[in-house]
Image (cartoon, rainbow, N blue to C red; front, side, top):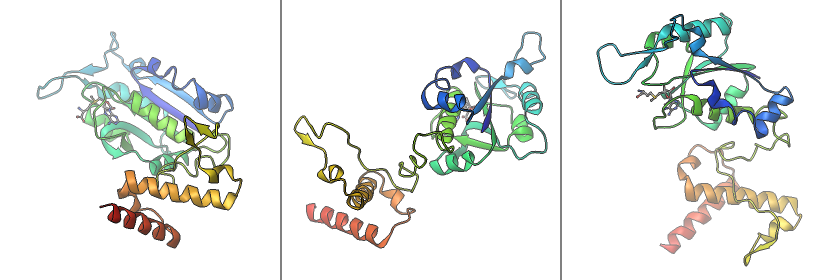
Length: 247
Ligand SMILES: C[S@@+](CC[C@H](N)C(=O)[O-])C[C@H]1O[C@@H](n2cnc3c(N)ncnc32)[C@H](O)[C@@H]1O
């Protein structure tokens, strides 16, 4: 996958994109990334990229010309490459959106700053707007890094095991259950016996039930949309009964 990132602050990306799994994805050619400094497309002799808002009010607005010129220069016209503006007004990012984005060979992420971007630039070159949550950041850079991270780990071969993300929270509409590793006893707390039993079917069943339990306890809203088997529903019914009995 190739990702173009348009930003006024390219140096913010050093670190998150040059460490760990993203670093390996780049080294193994599964990911190529190009950072484009929007300021380079400002024709103003002082490389001005923002201006005061028409109609007054505080803050500055990103001017339309450099953003539009940058995107038109880099993204070939007439293609279906998603050009996504990070924005608190966009649709809220989810694992499902990450999965859909990971199916593209190429993506563009555009980071706003200040009070936001002149609406005419959005109308001309942006195909989608994504928010990472219902709060306001100072710029789209951190949001872009979150999207790159969530999308790239879904690309084939990026994580060690091919289906390592199959049981992740939100991958199946549920939260993942708890994890344990060595030692078998830690400060008087044992790891669950079943995980040490080597019995694959029992481990699978335990994991499914703990995933259901955790979702029931922490995010019951997710259960409404999750795909549940007869056994899942029976297990949830016992959890509900236990809760009623506890009062
Ligand atoms: C201070 S914000 C502008 C907020 C804008 N005045 C509003 O109220 O909708 C500056 C930039 O940060 C980015 N940003 C802020 N919050 C975000 C969020 N929740 N998700 C994605 N991007 C965000 C966007 O690129 C935005 O253009």
